Structure formats: C-alpha cells, structure tokens
Image (cartoon, rainbow, N blue to C red):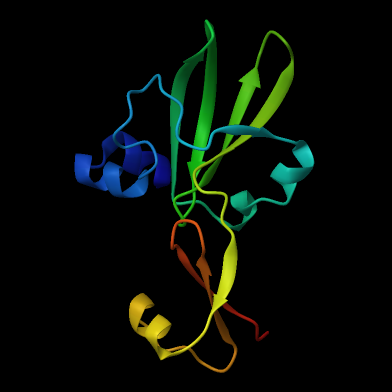
Length: 138
C-alpha cells in the first residue's frame, strides 16, 4: 500500500507522505543524511512502522548511492543501501534527530488537537516542534 501510494498516488499524496524529499531533485540527499550502525538501525523506529517508502539514486563525490528511504510520521526516516558488488548493506538516517521533552499542560493538548488521558504522555521535539503521544498503559 505504501509503495503503491508513491508509485500511483497523486502528486499531493506523494508530497504529504514524503515531506523530507518532496521538493528535492531525485539525485539529492535529504537533510540530516548520515550513516548509522547496524545496532542503531535495529533500535530505530523502522520496526514500529513507516508511512512511505521511496527509492533514490543520489550522488556524492562521483559515487552513486542507491537507497530505499523509509519515511516516519515525525518527518525523519531510515535509509538502506545495498552494495551489490561489495556484498554489504549500509544504513543511514535523515531528517531531524529529535530531542523530545515531555509537553505538559492544556496548551499542548490544544496544539495537538486531542485531550490526553491518564496514561497518555505527550512529547515535543525541541528542535523541530514535532509532537508524539505515547500511552503507557498495557
């Protein structure tokens, strides 16, 4: 479904699903692009769900990087590069490297458009302003 959205969706649907790359040329790297370790990848949001996937062929110092980019809800993401001839897989992150702080008070509930329950915790990124709500109940 997500891959279909990027391939067959409208231009507006693609723009909403991939905010970090929507206005970039297909050969450009998204902001915040940096390599990460396999351990960092294993602990990333990748396994909690992503909203869109795209393939990009980007160029850096005369080297092509063919990677699949997985976009998350927070405007950040993870990328995976398959080095066929080198027999390696490389991992990258892009977008904001969120620094969350717990957001308290009714003004934050209004800002995110929901009322928080007893087990809900709202967090706001101090760098980009992204909101995230988690429920701590089982």
